[in-house]
Each structure stands twice: as C-alpha cells, then as structure tokens.
Length: 203
Image (cartoon, rainbow, N blue to C red; front, side, top):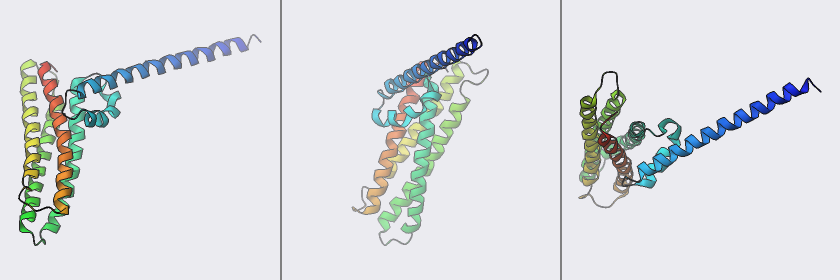
C-alpha cells in the first residue's frame, strides 16, 4: 500500500499539471481569437477576415504586426490562385472570336500578376520590420512601403474587373469577375490591418 502512494501522488500531480497547461492554452487561444475578431471588426469585410484568419490564432496571439503579416500571406495565396486561373483562360482567349473579351482577359492577367508582385513585396517588407537596429523612423518608412504596395495591389484588382465593363455578359466574364471580386475582399482587409498596425507607430 505504501509503494502505491508515491505513484498515486505522481499520477495526480501529472493530471493536475496537464489540466492547468490545457486551461492556460485554451485561455491564450480564446484571447487570441478575441483579438482577431476585434481587429477584423475594423475592416470592410469582418466575417471574411475572421473566418480566414482565426485558424492562425496560435501564431498571431495578440500581435497586430503578426496579424497583418498573416493577412498578407493569406491574400497572396488567394490572388496567386486567381492569377493562375486567369492565366489558363488567356490560352483559350487566344482562340476566341470575341476580341473584346480576349483583350479584357489578357489585361486582367497582367493586372493580377502586378498585384501578386506588389503583395509579395509587401510580405517581404513585413518580414524585415523589427530587424535589429530598426528604429521608429525605419518602421514608418517600411510600413509606408507596405501600405503603398497593398493599395496598388487593390487598384490592380479593381482595374481587372473594370476592364470587363464593355464586355457582354458571358460565362467567362462572370467567373473572372466573381473570383477577383472575392480576392479584393482579402486584399482590402489585409490593407486595413496593415494601416492599423502602421498607425501604432512602433514594431
């Protein structure tokens, strides 16, 4: 009986410690998701924002810079995917009898490629923020670059859909405009989170 008591004590200690750690982890996750939700409420598309970013709560925690970085990363993936989709359509457009639609598709592909480059540049700049020796002045300069590039990416996406205004209603127009309109929401949200982080003035 005596030999069982230390073992029982050890088991109880382990269970208690494990439960405490789980409770702490759950609390941290809850705080992180609350932070993401409140941050997303400042964007134009809060539901899209929270749904796409809440899964990264453990990585974001309550860090606005990390949240902006994740938002840009998610946006880059979305825009790159649509750019690839439009790229495939350009091959079909080369054989299309509708020259106006073909031109709009090619222009859209160019715009989306530019958007991908702008977002990729923003992501690279965000990863450099907070580097050793970077002061407040450097932070403002770096964030200004990110804001400019993300804003340009959004303009590129809007230019893509604007290019279809003179194209008659057709399946390809609907498909492209729907996809690009969707990624514009991600880009807009990412830009809003970038602006919020920039306004804090420190990395």
